[in-house]
Length: 98
Image: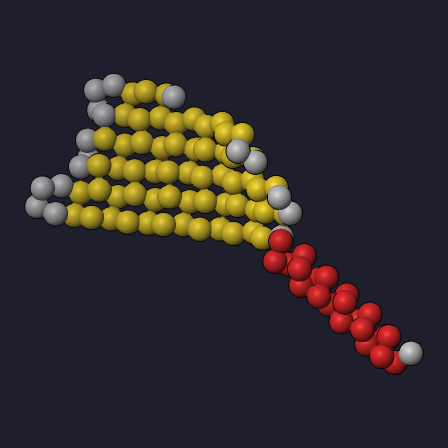
């Protein structure tokens, strides 16, 4: 009986560990800034993502400023490969919304 109870506890723990490795939530931000004699670029990419079983959903935002002359921002939403997104860019002469 004790051995059976110990095996049951071990099986339950293993099941919980398997679930924990299948259910994942991540937040990632990458930031870079580069200044040279020729120009300057600042970029930020942020990603939120969750995975449960075979389902994955993510939101990614990209922001960039280049040489004080150009800026852009884009958002991408992906749920199991079905993607939508929008963004905007401005070069000081013309702005575009995509």
